[in-house]
Structures are given as structure tokens and as C-alpha cells.
Image (tube, rainbow, N blue to C red; front, top):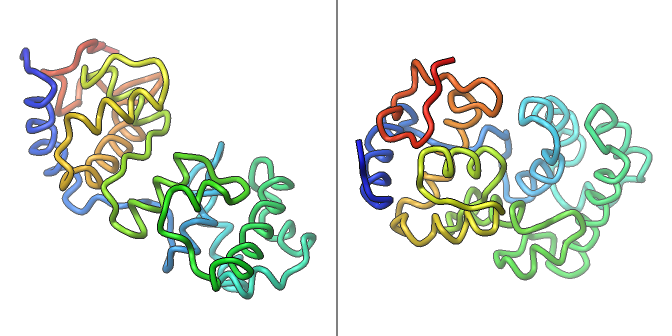
Length: 212
């Protein structure tokens, strides 16, 4: 099936919308602060690993005030099983203290302010803006980047280019859901090494289907 990018968006919304009728982050959180901390922890790690860690971490420190009052070694004790736990613990503690000192304990709702926080880059900021505040932004990780190029939504080499390309063709009101569609689809079906092409519901529009 040969479709233009915007036609593919409509097709994907119908097909992936049926597969993921309630698309949302797989990170477990109950506040913007918890999402921010979980997203920092999720770098180079799986959401499943993060959820195991944050279950106990957020029980001890559910908000910025409680987290900021902890000692570094205490934070490390909760996150020790995650990749790069030393740096992540330092960033979590620094972020919490900055939030208390400069933002009244609340997570800022602008990308500019979020990206000033230790350990927070554009993707992390976009995740928080989209999932916590419902902003129409497109967080692009390896899954979103890979899927978007495989099925021909764009031809890009860098995630920043993919973000810009997707924002041009996805209607603003669909952007947040589309992030989850592409991420979940890439995580469980259109995998990096062994894509499940034979059972793929969007194979007919794929630019490079495989038979493995």
C-alpha cells in the first residue's frame, strides 16, 4: 500500500489505536514529580526495572520535599540495582533540592526550565510535558525513531530530526497518543533485532518488511 505520510498517520491511528485503546506510559507514577524521577531512572534501563525500584523509593520519598531531605547514600540504596545508579542518585537528589529551592517543590511546566535540571535532556523533558501535563510534544526514543523510519513516516538519522518530522505530519490533538502508539509498537512488535513482521498489523504500509 503506497500512502503519503499524512495518510499513514490516519491509517496508524486507526490500527494502532485499536491495539492500544488507552495508550499511556508504562512507568508507574502518581504525580509530575514521580514521573520526572522515574524518567531520569529509565535512561538505559527498562520501565519494568524502574517500576520495581520506584515502588520502594516513592514509598519513602513520594515528593520533592521528602526526597530532598534524604542523604545521597540513602538514595543510592534504593536505586543501586539500576544502570548508572551513582549518577542517577546524584541527579535525583539535586533535582529534588532545586525543585524545593526554586520551584516551591513543584515540577516546572516549561521545557526550558525542565532542561536546566540535572539529568534532564530534551526527551525526558518531553516525556514529562506530555504525560504529566498533556502538552502536544513528541518524546523520541530509540523505539519511536526506529519505527518512524521503518514504516516511512520519515527518513532521518537523528532523534531530533525525527521529532521535527513527526510534529509536521501528526495533528496536534493526536501527538501525545501517537508517542505511545509508536513506542509500544516498537517495544513489543517492531523490535530492533527481531521484528515480528508476520504478525504486524501495519505490515502493508511498511517500507522494509521482513519475513523473520
